[in-house]
Image (cartoon, rainbow, N blue to C red):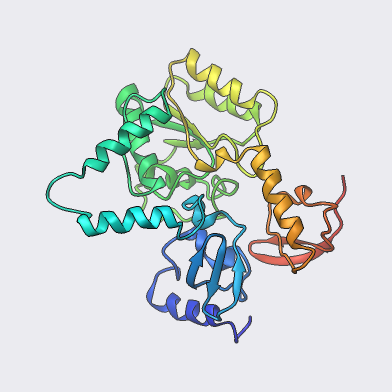
Length: 303
């Protein structure tokens, strides 16, 4: 542990007054570089972050959990936000921008009939699950991926704490989750068509919805998504896709990798990735295998 790391020092203090140390699981230092992660910033602009130690960092993660695709402190966005604040950003009445935004969303996504806004992804998924259960008059959910921390999702671990291991975190506790939700949410394995078909057929008459991230650390293989779509349509089971990161296409990924590789010529760059194959042979000198947030050993990549 780096005792000189100002961000780490503050994080240790935060853990004493904030449960878990941070407000968002995705920003926990343990998920990146335990004991050495900068943890806090004092300024962020574009893809550059200034930490508490005044050091400059280039952010090539997911820009605040996917919230800032235009970069931090974007000038145009800032200008519009400041303008809105000066006009009064809240009142007893509704903002006209609420209607304007909904209209814009429907125009961008013509397959939408209506738009509803929530404050978080987990809340949006809970709304989606309730709508699906209301529509079908059924309760069971078949899912694949990470969909938040609400009871409907965490209940998958009631009876078997390993159910969410490959979807969320190993051994996720179900304390506080009502026991009667047991077996109402069933996980299936990503890119495992046979696993999906087996579990779908077992509960197809009781399913309120099938929910999944269409792409995770890896892209969907073969007819994985087509099979799921076909089964849902045939049995009138609502199919819900969850995850903004699914918009990261191959062209965008290649552009990001090209930028990172260019930086390796002048700087020491640390890649944290689920897919080391994307940087293999690109001036990367060492590969370390990480497990549960800790580096375990130096490895050599095979084909």
